[in-house]
Image 1: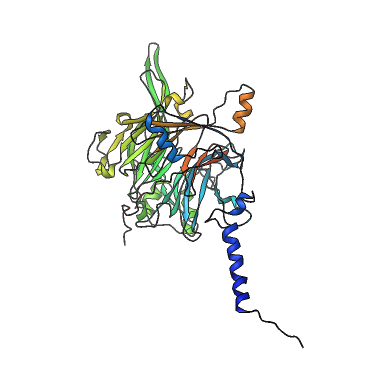
Image 2: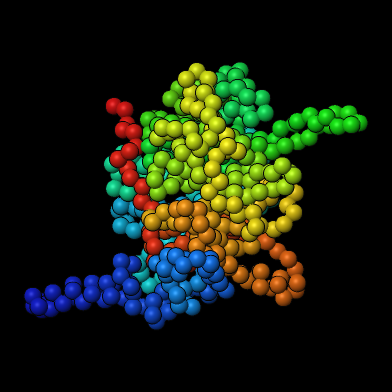
Amino acid sequence: MRTFEFISHNQAWLTIFLPALLYYTLLSPTTTPLLSYLNLQPSYAPLDTTISLAANAKSQDIINKIFYNDNKRKFEIVIQDQNASFYDLTWVEDAELQRGYLLVSDSASNGHIWRYETGGGLIPIGKSLYLDQSGCRSNIWTACQETCTTDAGSKGMAIQVDRDEQRFDMGRLIVAEGGEKRIVRLEQDGARTPLALNVHSLCRGGTVEIGGGSRRLNHPGKTLYTPFGDLLFVDEERCQVEDEQDDGIESITTLKSAIYRIKEIVNIPPISFRQSREAHSWTVEDMISKHKEVKVELAYIGAEYIADMIVGKDVSFLYVAASIRNEAQECRFVIYKVQDEENDDDDDNGDDEEGENGESVVKDLAQAKVFYDLTHFFPPKISQCSMYGSTLAIDHEGHVYATYPGGGLVVLNQNGELMASIQVMDIEMEKNAKQSIMTFIEPTALTIGNDGYLYMSTKTTVQRMKIKTKAMQQPTNLIVPKLQ
């Protein structure tokens, strides 16, 4: 006859408590895991990182509040993929996981969005696929080829947040699809709701109406969700301009970029999964007939190339990184500070024009205030102003971070004064430097994660650096409420 031995209450308590204690002290992502000191958590080789302070008395104190002053806190590569073309970064918080993760937009091939995180457990999660075919899948507007040379993948990303949400980084993902030439929102059932197909032509003018001189998105870039519930996004267009010369009229191709606005996107209803498949072939006529809530407006013009934009600490302002030409037709790389229209009580920052049919005013960036001129950090004698650009981030104190070619970035205070510059030398740059090869590795995106890291991407790498400061958390109570 088989007998059973029952454990005591004390033994049962230890059986539950000890494994939980071991997990919390050794593996938990909410603490400093002891295993990280044993090198069982992910460890990355530091890159050569040099922080140079500006020549003013305030720089040292400010930089000490942002960066650690030990040699261990340097940039490190956490993702490297020679077949990638990383374009944008955004941080997302997950209420169920009670932690966040980094999303990385890859514009190579037909596009991928990667997810990077260090989860709890002995084996780190690292990089995983979040969304496949994130920029091209229908073959209608672009031939979606499995090759890294098409650059038809996903571009800019943003998070649509609802009013009074816990945080400004919790919500639905918005993606600019390069190959499909549109802006979409990812719904819970996997559907992709189109938010923008056509925009005002920068060459001909006109409005986004049937027969109104509009065009399909050409090269959608960075996107931005504002604290008021609007979506801003960048697109560019090449225009033919006739230039009168002594020997006749010459046709010149010029690049124009603009920022467009879609108001109150929280009130654009989702489409079904079945409609999502049909929507790949939608034209602007289909969009207007089936999706009347969408209205795209021209917001900012006057730049040859717009690389990035962020909301300022005072949420009524935007910082816009743009490339322009001076009177000598030389490229300048500047950051503008412009007052966004939702709180536009004066017109000191731009030359405003009334839009048609009661539309919002259109601001000329050329008339806006230059917050900081980055030109001296860029390679000299650049003929194409769109060849390079600056990407932006902002912390909770309002310090602005801006990148420049060569793997570097600057830190600016709220007055547009230089606090420090940071130079990062990666493996390829070190190798080329030894061979006397001049290379400029261009940062493509910059963001501050809620995990205490400053993240920077290039086309083939994602790098991070441990910092003391935190990301700016925008309010959610200014977002327009959803219509009932």
